[in-house]
Amino acid sequence: MNQNYLGISHSTDGWRNLAQDEYLLNTLPQDALALFFYVNARAVIIGRNQNPWAECNLSAMQEDQVQLVRRVSGGGAVYHDDGNLNFSFICSAARYDEQAQTDLILRALRHLGIDAQQTGRNDIACDGQKFSGNAFAVRANNRQRHGTLLIDTQLDAMGQYLNVSAAKLRAKGVKSVRARVCNLRRFCPELTVEKMYDALVHAFEQEYGAAQSIDVLLDTPQAQREIQALEARHASWRWRLGEAPKFDYQLNDRFSFGMLQLCLTVIGGNVAQVSAYTDALDVTLPDRLEQALTGLPFDPGALASALDALDQEGMEIAAYLRENGFTD
Image (cartoon, rainbow, N blue to C red; front, side, top):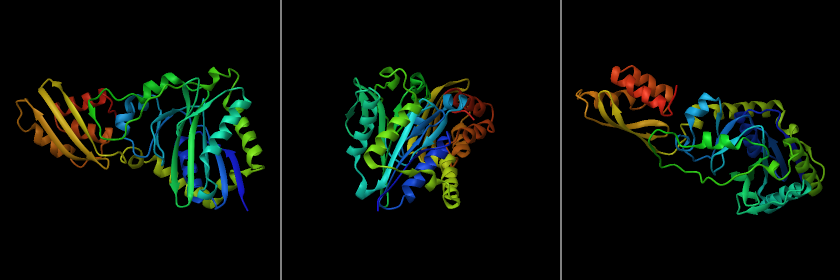
């Protein structure tokens, strides 16, 4: 017998919410359908295969305490805050119907007086401007489609935190395509996250009938243990930053000791190869940079600390990295 679940997270922590989302994908019973909502505090959410150094302004994010979250699904980088409602449809392959899910969202929007259209598989737009992007994941026989609904998000923050760092970076990872975006409040000035949630709940119940609370699945002792383990992984440096595709970081600038071109090849989050070219009088500098940096995690603190420990030249390079996007 088919069973439906519906509800919203009690947390605004991105790592927690993505852990709950992943737990539901991993464990939702066969023949069940869940619609899970959550609102994240300020965060940048990147796709499974994206390179955060290429996609995000990590320096600005760290300074402003904007969380970096990597989801299990593909797609591009997005900015979340409390003006954005996130939804996640999860069900077995037999009940998975993307068009029905999209139609449900469109009906809820029409109920609010908003005439929106599906644009391709991934996006929903109004008046030619995107307010909802979607991503997809598979786990065993379960399918997931989750996405955003921009209601009253700080759109200026998107440009601030999704800009590529000022440091000279050559990346081989997946790059996001920036689309023109809008808030739904432009078309419905009285709209709030709560009203959007209520409209979606109403549309869901009209389509599928009564549903149990999602808390039935999330609040058991076993579920809490598994969610906590997933949350720890989502919060880890290895998952957020060390899972980036292979990429090269290239620094090329003038310092007090001369010109320096420093190239780091990063594989699996660690510095695998260091090549340094300089006109500095100190002929040992390239070798010392290679010895100091090879094998380190490509982590701001680790790189800066290793460079600071070298000598005056190393401290100057560390200061340059901090200034251009790599802060400890």
